[in-house]
Length: 369
Image 1 (cartoon, rainbow, N blue to C red):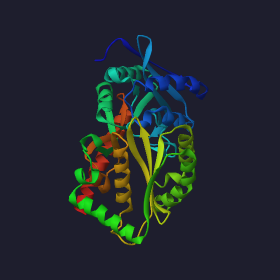
Image 2: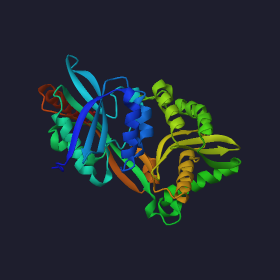
Image 3: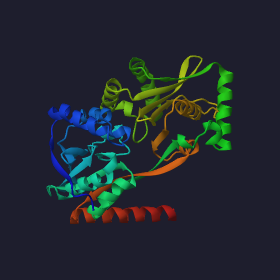
Image 4: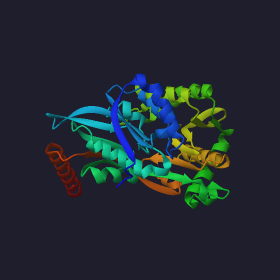
């Protein structure tokens, strides 16, 4: 149960109210222990992409706003025939618009009463107009899902993901020596040595908006070459993704780019967000070398982490996604997921059961073959 003094309400949201929402959001943001992905700089840039109907959920205690969240409405057809209404928390359900990829998703909550407020807002969603049948929440942590699980008895996990972070509080002086394994350390040292033999190796972190904007063209080129032909593709081939990041860079001082150069030619970039003394690694663009002992990514991450340790940053979050380099460079692991929650609905129950059977059959077939 949550504190009954907390009340929550839901109402339609239109973009003409964005200025008023900005004031409320930023005021509450100062009370919240939230990630970069719930900052007004992120949410404001995201709102400019949204084309579907939106709703805002507000929570109050003693007349003060203590919780905010934005739901986006979408329709889909179950089995291609039966239409249902979905609501997405800080996402749209559109692949292109969601390629910006929110993580650590949650309601924006006053830190001192966060759990009670989250429960009150989840309760309000459950009791709201019965027309929507499904709520999609993620990528989020277990504490967020616990609230929804208690109220919505039906759910389906759509994505399960690990996240990795370097907690700087456990580092005394030297990240390379104190966190990394002997094998990872030797790979970085060897990579650095070979690169230094090839010429002048330099590292910098770019923080000035104009210079950041000037780097994006080269970053996009390298990123498209690496990811353009994959199933998900490169975000830099997506106009919505590009517009979002242009807005984010130009309206906030949260974006920084780490640059590794060889003979004054950039060979690696990391786009990072710095927010509330935490660094979030968002995206990399790395040049490939024929010599597989050259590890541009490992070298660049090590230098970037060391830079932020010395700057007094609290942590370096690699965010979601299972990858060997993230495991090797971090000292903590966490879980993230994407869930569908819904009221008991025979269509959705049957759909979930059929998907479960399909996955079981696919797994059995793969074991046999």
